[in-house]
Amino acid sequence: MAKDKIHEQVKNALIKDGWTITHDPYTLRYKEIKMSADLGAERTLAAEQDGQKIVVEIKSFVGLSQVQDMKVALGQYNMYIVYLNKTDPERNLYLAVDHQIYPEFFQQEAIQLLLEWYRINMIVVDIDQEEILQWINW
Image (cartoon, rainbow, N blue to C red; front, side, top):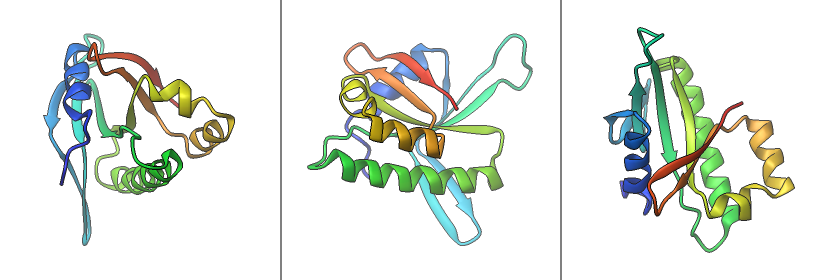
């Protein structure tokens, strides 16, 4: 499976933010279905023994149609969330995107409706600086 063109930058941004990459890729298995999300990561907080665990799907949205890219991302995200809830429920799922595409595409009212409806958690990453700019949680 080919990695997204911003895969390494997102991975480095997570590491800079204190996350340990535990899976690259993160394999989801449920019954006869096997799928791969881009990354699994965890971070231990001083106040929490177990810490936080996440799965990250990375999308650059550079295809011929951003709407088509969104349809694919939504399909993957929704399948992953169902299987994660059954197999690894302590992990939260995130969609990671470049900070340049976020205001241009994801701030549109029609796209915001989808993000809210499907409760899409997001990580907005400055790809050039390899830094996380924003966590969006529902």
